[in-house]
Each structure stands twice: as C-alpha cells, then as structure tokens.
Image 1 (tube, rainbow, N blue to C red):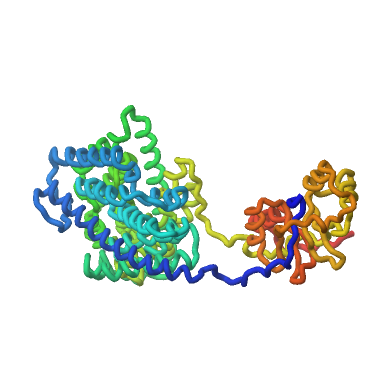
Image 2: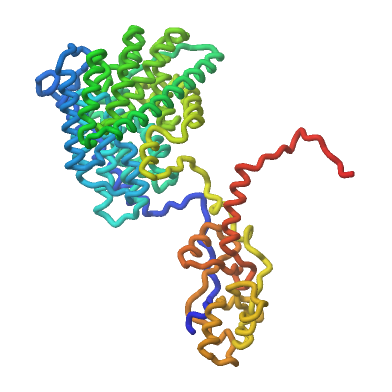
Length: 597
C-alpha cells in the first residue's frame, strides 16, 4: 500500500541555473592531467620518429642511426621485395599474438575505443602500436607516422585516465588529448591538432573536452623545439598574387581533390574486400601487401617509406612531370594495398603526397607555379578524404608557415568536402568502423531538448483527482469507463500537487480489501513523484523521467500548484518539430497572393 501513491512533501526544487555552458570546476583537474598527457604525447612522437629512423637505417643502409634518410635514391634489387615482405610478416605476427588493435592506421581504432570501448585502451596497444609502425614504415611501408602516434598518444591518455576515478567522457577527453598531443609532436601543428580532435574524435564541442585538448597540444608544442626542432616541418612561402577569378581555379582544384579522395576511399575498401576473400589467415596479409610495396618500389623507390622528402620535393615545384606521374600512380597502388592488408601505418602523409602530386600536375597548366598547386592539392585531398576541411586548411598552413595561402586552402578544402560528402556516405576513417556494425553521426547540432522549455510542450488542461476522494470512489472510478488514463495527479483544495495515483495500485487496494472510507491522501508514501517546472529545459525533465522509468510527469509552479503535465508523447513531439525545421520548405517572399473567393 505504501507504493500506491507518490507524494511530494515539499514543492519541486527550482531548476538549476541555466547557462550557455555546462563546465564546472572539475575541468581544472582535467587541465592538470592533460598537461601531463600532452608532455607524454610529445615524447612519444619523438620516440616513434627515432624508431622509424633506426629501423630504416638498419634494414636499408646497414647502419645504426636515428637520423631519417630518404629511400628515393635506393637502387632497385631483390631487397626491395624481401624487406617489405619480412616487415609485413613481423607486423602480422605482432597483431595476431599481441593485439589486433595495432592493425590499420590508428584513427578508426581510436574512434572505436571512444564510441564503444568506454575510452579504455590496453597497455599492449601503447607498446605494440609504435613498435609495429616503426617496423612497417622502416621496412618500406608507404605510410605516415601520424596515425600510429595518434593511437599511441591516445593509448597513453587512456591508460593515464584509468588510474583515476573518472567518467567515460573524462577518459575520452584525455584519450583525445594524448592523440592531439602526439600529432602536435610529429608535425608541430597545435591548432590543426585541436581542430582534428573536434572534427573527428571528440564528437562534441564543449569546454569540458576542448580546454584539456588545448592544454595538451600546448604542452606538446612547448616540448617539440627541444625534441625535434622549431619552425614549420615543410617551410614554404609562395604567394603567386593571382587575380580574383583564381577563386574558381581554387574551387576546381578542390573538386579534383574531392574526386581523388572518393576514388582512393572506394579503392581502399574494395581492396580490403579482396583480402577478406583470400584463403589464408589475416596474419599473412601484411606480408602479401609488403610484396606489392616492394614491386612498386622497383618502379619508384620514393613511393616507399614515410615520404616526408617527397612532400618537400613536391612543394619545391621542381620535380619533373614524369616523376610526379610515376609517384602518384605507384604511391596510390602500394598505399592502398598495404593499408588494406592491415599493416600498421598512417594516412595523412600518403594523402599529402597523393594530393600534392595531383596538384603539381595541375600546376603545369595553371598560373602560380607547381608548388603552390601541390600545396592546395595536399590540403584538399586530406580534408576531403577525412571529412575535416578546417583541419585540412589549418594543417597545411602550420606545416608550411604560409598564412597567405589560407583563403585558397579554405576554398579548395570546402570544395573537396562538398564533393566527398555528396559522393560517399562515409569517410576513409569511418567506413572501416561502419563495417564492424558501428554507426557514427559526424554532424553536430544543438540538442532540441536543450533549447525548449517544459512550458512549450506541456498539456495545460490536466485531468486530476481530489486528494479527499474516498478510496471506494476511486476504485469505482477506475473500474468504469470513466478513467481515461493510467495515472492521475492528485491535488488538494488549493490545486497543489499532493501525489500521483496509478490505476494498477488502486486495483491492488481493491483486491486487498482496504478501508473503503479512507481518503486517498491517507495513503501517501514517502516518495516524491517525478515532476517538473514550466521554466526548466525539456532535456532535464526527460532525463529524470527516463531514470525513474515514468511515462508522464506533473508540472508545478513555485508554490507547488499543478499547472500541466508532460508525457512521453509530448517529449517525442520535440523531435518531430525539430525534424520539421529541417525538412519542411516554404516560400514567404515573391509568392502571388491568393484571395479567398
């Protein structure tokens, strides 16, 4: 009987003060943690680059050195096939007997850990990912170091967070902070790293997550001059001073980059499907991919390895057209095959090379020089393939130090982004996750439940029962057709909410033979019903209704007087109205006025 009614013994507490942001003082703790994670990310980037250089020098040049050399001058020979294949085999063994999370280029794995793994990564990933990437890239794999360091930095941030009592969202913030710090350590691009976090990893834009990421990348940027040197990674300053109509050329270059991005993405996953059909265990796939890499190296050695020297050569604008064509074709083939095979490596540097080669070829026919158009192609191909146009534009600026190119970069990235989102439903990063059954919504918007107040959706005319009603009358009411609802608010003579009465509960009273003369107010329990206030946000009330598993909530004013009620149907109507704002189209100006007859 104590559960038959629920009663508020005091008025509903006023809703918490509303504001534009939800951050509290706990963000200060995250900022302190992020500074440590950011420092670790910078040192992880330094260690990864040294490992890549060490493996490269050992297997190709037979020397112990941590200064990265170029593979472009290698003489074709049997080693070009054997070394990448052996490297792929080692990576395959590490993935099978260590952790299969090290397969691929790292960013999809980080996204997957955020979405379905509670932002928890294992210590194995933090150790095996940079080691496997160093082996894969050092033995000729056509990858960049950014994907592995994003995964490695993210793994450290996740491991660090797991030592403290943090929520999954706070662990996610530190995971992303580590990833962004690693990218900053490799490339020296703090602003682009923050934008990459927002566009690809955080799945929100809140002070709680954005501020720690900023602190982490600043910490990494502070360490980078001491670890890897200061200044842009690829210094480039070439302002061709083109006329206003060059804007259309920038957009055209972006369209071409978007088409290239879409083609690369499609071919990558078609090739991955072919590997899935092979009658051998996936452990052997990287070795098979390594053989293809070696064969490509026989044609164009510069297509192998991390390729930073090729990026610099393309930006110089002095690379012969035949060599650019050969680099574009060979790099595309071996990168797609190697990545589809599950070898560990990144995508940013290869996308820069492929986009830069396309842009350099365009520059043969366009004003401004091949180097300038190579820069636009690099940036737009990355922005289109990853669906991160702001990151693509700022990344190119920070890599080169050429701020004057920003308008052209923004135009090209915007065009590439438009092309790719219209051609493909998913990006080169999210398609892999979607194939595992995880859907990702990459479009951010304000939650309609956080814009609308309860007073806008509540029903004002409420059917109620008086608290003075005798129990026998209540039983009779619910056992006849007069009762239209399963739950009724109870009010006193002044209209104040006393409690709620549930049909099932009153029928249990009937079966128990309770006192017929007692009034409903005599059976009140000590539990307050789930109720709301007209001025609070719908999202706040919806959360309480979901947590308490109630289908409707009475709405009271500051005095406790009942002024309305909200049901699940009313809450769902918010989504319907938000959908209508997106889909219903009307013309208000320029229409011919029609008068009623």
